[in-house]
Length: 374
Image (tube, rainbow, N blue to C red; front, side, top):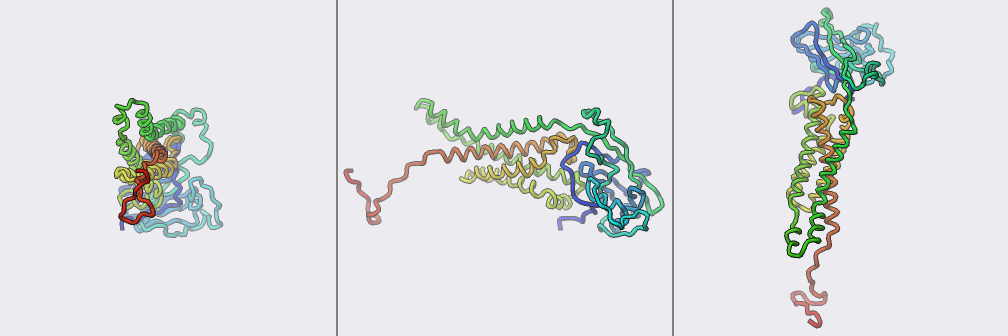
């Protein structure tokens, strides 16, 4: 009941983890009330929402009928080559014999809501090599081209979706990874605080041993807080990806999280839960932190590390904020995992406490044992 009706995806669900090209819809000309077109998924798709009460038609690459967004849903023309070319972000497809733009359209319904998202290769860069102007000056932000996607209303009136495609220079991945590693090592160092405290106490005079050897009780709450921060960052980044994909409203975002961001969300929530569990100071607290830290760092952090090397990050905020979220996830997760592992290793190396004296086995129950020569 929480998941609303979903728009038609024409086709696939191959949202990029990052890109160096920014696609922006600048206008629908002439303007039509109730008709909205925008770029989603870091520009990988265009989304058209039709609340005009009429039929809006998207034309294909040879001006053939491609999509019809009617009040009762979305329909696609099986004879349009765009149906098959737009199945992937790369446009690689073998056209079937029926893909003939000269044939009269044959419509099949793809959705029951008047919203459609599709890869349109007119709006993004298709080649693996950059444009000549970008190759000549890769560190300079620049316009690659202006693009147009033609529409038709009620089969008569022609509209145009106009937009821009810009090159966004990528950041230095080395710099971002360096800061992440440094932050993770700083957090992991907390796992050595107890051992260093014991080492210090062994070098002090006997009169100060009771002070220097006091237990370090602040480390575990700090690690729990860092784990929770990393978990929150993982969930926020995942929600941001779904919003950037065009989902709006609680039900749509929740459905998108279950469909495409389930592991980052689960590991983020696990990191938060591990932090709360560790505050109870139960014996398994360090193990919970270590396990959750590794999982959130890999599934929610490293899996989104493309943000460090791409100019456009698939979130509705600035690229810098998106990169900071990913950096926090990796540094917090890896750092907490390392610190917790060091704490477990230190605990395992402590000498066991002297065992309590047990009764002699052959003594009857309730009779105190007497040692010879006592």
